[in-house]
Image 1: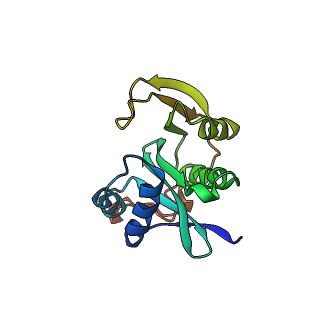
Image 2: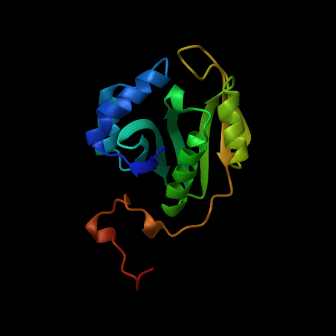
Image 3: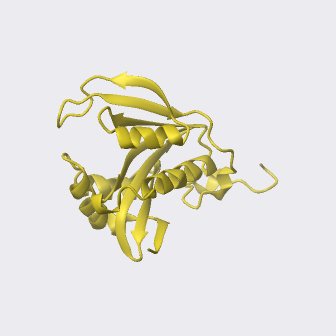
Length: 172
């Protein structure tokens, strides 16, 4: 198989929604994706492709020193092949390159496969949210990666700055 991970933009909102609808009981709307992809300077989306077909995506919000994983999903027929781990590693690398010092996420208490993957990647349990998921009332486990790889924020191709905020090599 020819899998690749690429940055997603607003033109992919419909394809992201297709994945979202297939993976979640209470999917986000197309309007949420379009707004997040066009108007939210904190959001970054990565897509997992099988050749040219989107088969999964991940979204992280970068807020100061924190990277908050908003969503990670892979179509069911592609699960169990390490692709979710590959996508998460890419989100971690992107976040570290953008200056994040730690990463946090919520995961369904019943989602043992995801919890195991996060633990394998170095996440630890840091909290619990009772009744967090509105669709089922299920609890969430809060996990954090507190030892992010160190990278240079200038490597982030999606880094958004106002012209007046741009730094030269001499300023850094």
